[in-house]
Amino acid sequence: MEPTEEVFFQVQELKEAIQELKEQIKEMQSINEVQQESITSLIALSQKQTTVIEQQTSVIQQLVSR
Image 1 (spheres, rainbow, N blue to C red):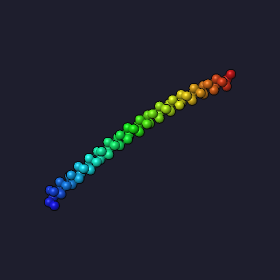
Image 2: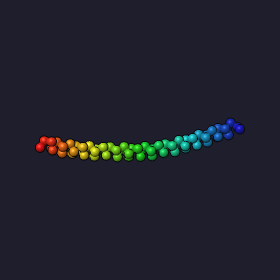
Image 3: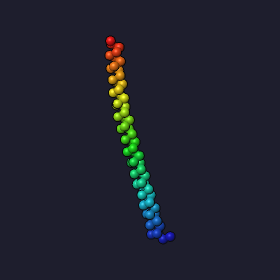
Image 4: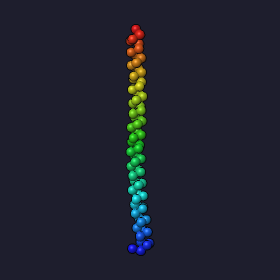
């Protein structure tokens, strides 16, 4: 193989490797978005649960103080 052919072959391999990495990055970004949505949902659920607990505590305190 001539040096120019070898260099061309190496460049092609690098291009393919770069393309694979770009695809992996896109997949990771998609996974990250889904995880972020899940985290946001969990935070919202936790806040709702906190509100319910606060309401229950208030009712219990009212019942106890009667």
